[in-house]
Image 1: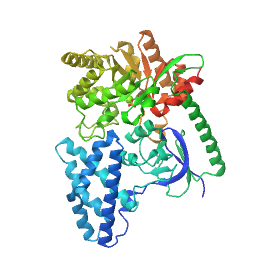
Image 2: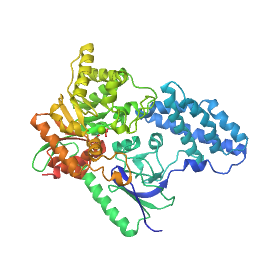
Image 3: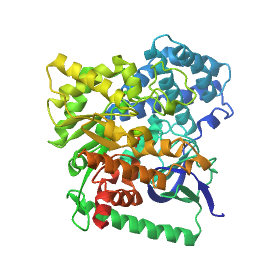
Image 4: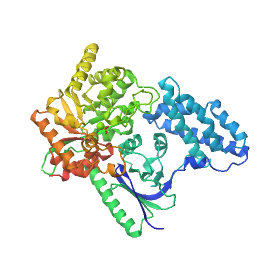
Length: 526
Ligand code: PEP
Ligand code: MG
């Protein structure tokens, strides 16, 4: 067959070569011709049993972020009422998959229309559960769908639960027809070092070897021998680099001329980062706390948040933890939180703006953070800041809560993600700052970070406009002796690291899976 190229966007970097494996198309399963009602009921029963096994396994693996969703889904599968409607349709001659889909639809609608935000949020979990059973139906009645070792998994899109259901330690990477680089799945892949390319369009369902080039955002299906050879050489270079990186991961990072650079890690789900990696870095430079909220059945209360932050501090063994307060809104909506409809959510009520509007969200988090700060070196970082008045308001709020608790106020800093914050850093009442180059790039370039096609090409942190602004921030921070870091994804990329060091950055925070390589690249810089 002829070599085929699909162009998409890098959502998690890396390179992989392996058999292309198409995850069963859930929608197509619904259109399979029906067997006898008995056969179809047998298939449905066994698909439900398979799904239960998969959910129980996932739950046992302790992905804390998803535990409540999985628990809810298991409970639903144990409820006979859930299967009744599908069974009635099967008895009338409807194929199992279509019956399951149609039987569940009214239940999803009931959840989606509930007044209680908790139940409304369950609609998405039920849809996820519907798809899991559909996938089991599409893949036959055997055990969990298992792609071959080293496979490049191709799918239209992936829900977090389908992503977590696969054993990525044995797989090459994922190629998605749709999806966005800023999605929840993209975050999960980046933290775990799994190459992921999104927005590839319709990927033809063929059996072939494929190359997933998650450096240039390319999927090559059926590579010609010369192409395959070229990529095998690149893979060998990559492996050699990984071996060299592993040798320097635990050592402090230094440039060739001896300049010390602090390298911290970005954490979304603390349980997804092993202890040795946590301790190899110079602390956590960005804890994305919104991921404790997203994908959870109940909103984490003060006590639960406190335990999470305190445990992470304990695991860090004295290294600093920069806790970013909730960055909800924009591309990260929180199900069940009735937010106003906005024509341009990235420019709307997100991050600190939302928290200042919603003390019911902000207060428990601030109190939990203050209590954890009494246990170790924790700083509070505010996202999506535009002007000093917002920081003053947040600081007053934090001070009041600290006073009520009889606790000290830890250092309070901001993310520099808006051109406004970058240009007026000197006016900000802060103890430290960290450049969020992901958002800063989208706001400087006026191109949404989840864009595809021509607009996506503008999301380039190495554009002279973005680099010039970063230099302005570095100078402004130096002028007032303000500790400055950069925690956007450009610091997990080789060209990004080189540009940042040249601009005078001395502290970065990177994806855990990139920590070793970043230290290696720093060593090669002047
Ligand atoms: C950023 O904007 O660069 C950043 C680190 O924050 P997030 O990617 O979570 O928006
Ligand atoms: Mg951001």
